[in-house]
Image 1: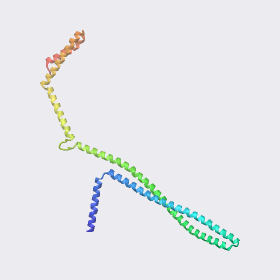
Image 2 (image 1 turned 90 degrees about the vertical axis):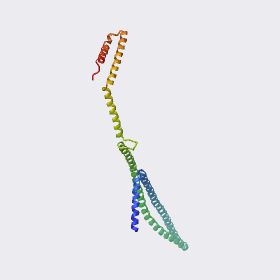
Image 3 (image 1 turned 30 degrees about the horizontal axis):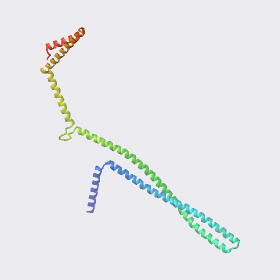
Image 4 (image 1 turned 30 degrees about the vertical axis):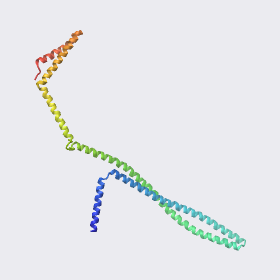
Length: 263
């Protein structure tokens, strides 16, 4: 029963993730991924900073221990020299005091020397860790920069994909009926072409009809009257000879009217 519930829960989880990924905005998901990469880089830098800080603290402790060792070593030498001077002066009390001090300094030197050796080994380890941390930060920085460049490329591709999808949708709608009240482009084109063909056919019929011929005759008569009036004006201006060609045109048009249009 527990296994069945677990399998059912895993199925529902996978289904929910699938539906979420289908409906989620890729641009927002991309920004989330980049933000997560920034957060990881920030956490890595903080960890690297702690490692480097530990290395620096170890280095400080080592330098301080070495300075103290050098100081105690000098004190031990000074105590030995003072004990030797007291021995030369046959001052046994001073000899004992300086010898005790020299032994104390020597014991202290032994402890500090051990501490220095431990700090040297620790310093080597922390230095290696710090170098690795720096390298890790540099490598991750390069990876982050690569992701940022990839983000720009993906955003450009996403914009192109959206534009292409919109273009495909528009092209598809041109050959499909949008709705009951909105015809397709093909339907509108067929309707316009039908009206145009009908208008052209009607015009051809009008040209071949008696009414069409009568209109042609009326227009020719008006042209004859206009030419006659121009001839009168030329005669008044003394341009009778120049009007001869015009008179010939008028006579030809008059003859065409008298003969009638050809069927």
